[in-house]
Image (cartoon, rainbow, N blue to C red; front, side, top):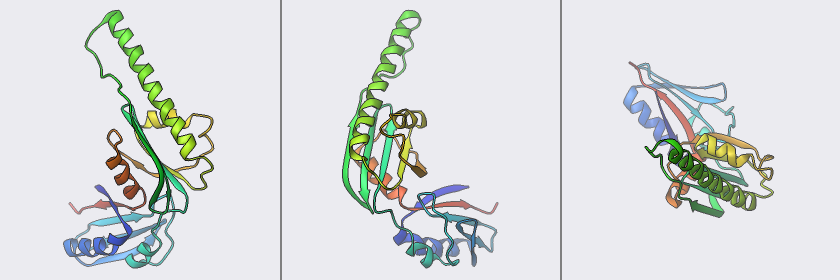
Amino acid sequence: MSQVQVPAERVERWVANFEARHGATALETSEGALRGVATDGSTFEMRLPFDAAYGGPPDAAAFAGILHAPADWGVLLVRKGGFAVARLTGSTIVESKVGQRHVQGRTKAGGQSQQRFARRRDNQARQAYEAAAEHAARILAGLRGPVVTGGDHAAVEEVLSDPRLRSMTTAGPWLAVPDPRRSVLDQAVVDASSAQVEVTNAA
């Protein structure tokens, strides 16, 4: 089983390529997704982003036609090494901030030295999360749509626990990203607003 993100403009081509590889493919709409079953037994399940359910006809063009980002939404990526936050209108970033924070790696030292190191590392991570929350509260203030999150689960939860962010609505997909940089943020925006496809190849 594998998972891929497919932007709206590539959905029809992706389905055609799936059929070319696996044989004639029957499409159906099932449980909020567009499903395909090929003659070789391979299947795919294509879902809309932002936890939206698809209820249209079993047709790739129809699916692609409603695959678009909200008018007002956000992305929040957090890891110990940095953060990225963006506010978007459709596919356009209207405001963003990317920040890196130095958080020391683990040490092999033991005893009190290790304890001091762990406290310092925790303090550095906490400062990074506070910076992420500060920028997220500013950039996403009054957001009407959802926030797509990614990075490290514990780090994201820590940032979202800020009182200014608790009322925000988060939505899938979860984005597994490395330490955020501008290029990582740009790709995350594309992935967040793409079709989420799970492929199961026949044995």
